[in-house]
Length: 277
Ligand code: HPA
Image 1 (tube, rainbow, N blue to C red):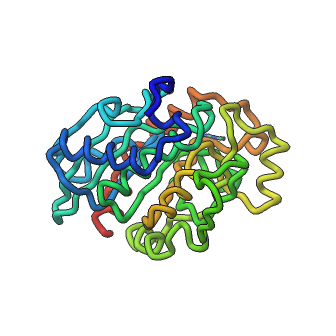
Image 2: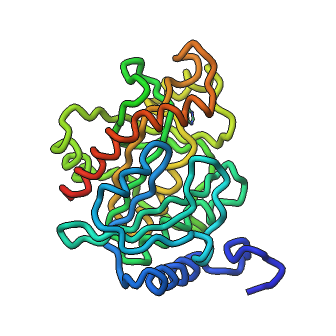
């Protein structure tokens, strides 16, 4: 690997899947857990779910794992946790998300997902805090992601890699989630690049093309998860109504506050869903 590159994934010659394998080996070595069955990326508002899943076997600093970047944002924890569920399932909780808007490229964005797959995970649960387009979704509402529209104009797939995205957000897993909470609504997640929030006109465009949720993360990660052969469950916490739908200006503080307020309820819900998988 060239020493000109300070981050292994920034070397265009490097194989991102080999780096994910190296990261998985780091996780196995540091946690003492050879394989994980499921992985969860916990976004704004969802972090406490980790405490409710089962017994934490190890908590490690993401920056000790090959290819992980420092978290860019307050409210995002830079740790990885290995959890043993009461039913014997091993869960890897990823509290370190690299966002596309950080500008480090898609390889770094999806590295945690590829690493999760390399640890053995067959199910990837992706959560986020997001804006709601449906007016009936008050801040604090958890919503299942049924599909996405990727407006980043980018992809984690490199070269002529054609991957089917039908049923990307697994119908089977959504049914299990609704079995736990039949009131769970669902919608199409629209990923914008950010980090600015959308304009009201962009929100209207998202609505016109079939979007119900606006956010800055999950779609690219879901594509990578599918490429790695994982089944995906996506959930958004509606932290605010999207720009122009809500009449007051959006603020990051408001988003974090809505996340904090909803956290006990949605974390408990997510833990129950995971127990039902
Ligand atoms: N738009 C995009 N991302 C977000 C929002 C939003 O309104 N709220 C929280 N994350």
